Length: 392
Image (cartoon, rainbow, N blue to C red; front, side):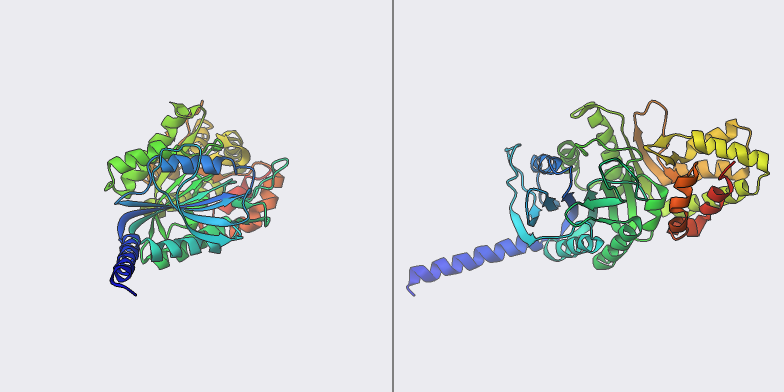
């Protein structure tokens, strides 16, 4: 090998070493988007990735996407880079994975572990992108919605309980709580879902209502984040909630009725305790008063399904129906600490947290057995109240 060839080899090794060092640089944040397009939302996947590419990763932030598309046989992991092409995804594929079941919660954990090993960061913002159905499966004509991350190729999904497991395993991998968990999906602004991951996540973002197909306004949100890269996780979820509303309130997505809530899970214990007290006080009422509670549950603000109701609207209606117990104010006070952002433009005000309040026998009988096993119910005995008001 001549001298010139040796120089080229050395330069190549140096460049490879520099690239490896850059990928191992510990950044302030990782945003991990588990983007499951193996369903009828597939066309929105590249649209949202192109929005991410309008900003791209930077010296403070890695934007990493695990992208499954119904049009592709192989799942790809991308490191999002800034570009000027809004119609084509140009970010480098840093790993081709072959066929992956995006309805398997363990694949979400593997994504977090891979990011932590190859693109380490101090803080983590984990996003599951797909259809969402709240804490339970539901029946929609022509679709098979189940909790979250429905993979039509495998017929599998991630359940609420499994999502909690995924965040618990992720926290172990990171050595600290996941800083932010969020669903770019419908109906996930529920106390039951947040409770499953409350021991392993600091802040939770979710929509009480359905999300339009376009989902989040990634370009505008990431632009604001890039302008203030050192903002706290609490500030970041507030910025996101406000920006999401702005996008559908005459912004980049026009005008649609939407909601987005942010929860501080450090306050979930007091919130759950207040709901436990409310469940006990309501369940102890006489039959005439229980009938008023049941009527309040049936008329409270609902979100797509008859058994998903707004917590505070339920309590306010109970108050109007003549029910007064100490816990009612305790719930209001605790929720004001728990909900740190409540962006909404509904025709009637929503308060940021949905809860399971079935008002017909099919909703009740279909889910009550599973509900008993949820962490939220184990901490609050909410199923006792739900059972008491059936048939009232």
